[in-house]
Length: 352
Image (cartoon, rainbow, N blue to C red; front, side, top):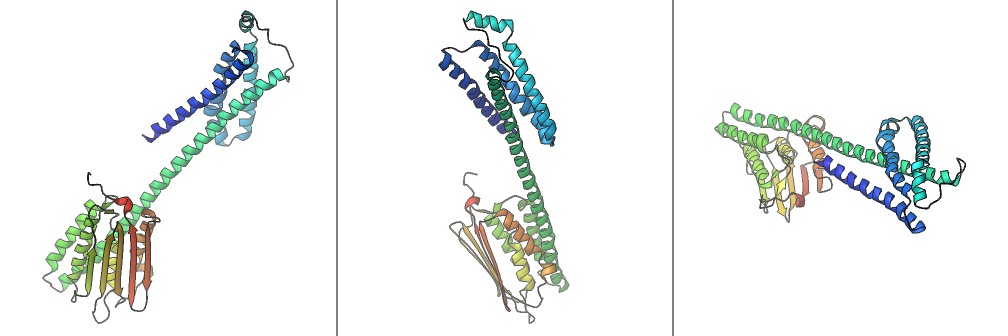
């Protein structure tokens, strides 16, 4: 579809250019002479040869293959040949007869470097040069379009790689949580397995879309926190507060889970105390996410455990560009993440 649109635009440009090239000299001749000489029609029919030989053959098959000297040589030969042939055609008995019928004198003689030959050569060179410029411009836009398409494909591949890298990380942490329940023979283990199945269903069948409903993403977060609470002794210190209208808005999936995973991983101190505070608010389509956890028993290993956070930062840079703000603050006791997203461009229309 895109190729057809480009071809259509190209065709329109060609038509406009040739109308200008054709009408201007004919109109000038009519103003100066009161009529249009018959040989000018033949010249107008021959001039596209100049344009399209350079546009379709010389530029793509010689110049763009970096054979500059060959291009210059064949261009000079072609222009000389074209001007010689066109001059000979103008001096045929048929053309002289037409001029006599119109009571116009035969073409005057002159040396090969006289004005009679210089002006047509300059004009033919201009048409030939215009064809070359068009060929270079079309090639430039073609390469630019292909470059952008390739860049988008590479970015999509990179994004998919980051997501695939994140999902096993999530599954590994979740299985660890269930394993701890099974090992302690907790009655919550079956419920944990069901909750995990719901999380995996969301990740496999819904989060594969480019964007998902913000409401479903919030449900996913709630299920994940419910799974983590099953393995904690003190669940009162795990707080989740969601404010605002989450319906009719979309968000890119699985962007927040790394922050929450790390909060549960590091948010328990050596006494077994847990402190995780998650605040989510939506105001005027502006999404605000805040999470705070104590720096607990396990020391953060940025080299080995920071894979999820680094990946999520890369995803934010690609997906939201300048439409997000992310600040991460850490002191001796607390680790805090504050994220804001502009969801204006992700609105779901009710008629969908």
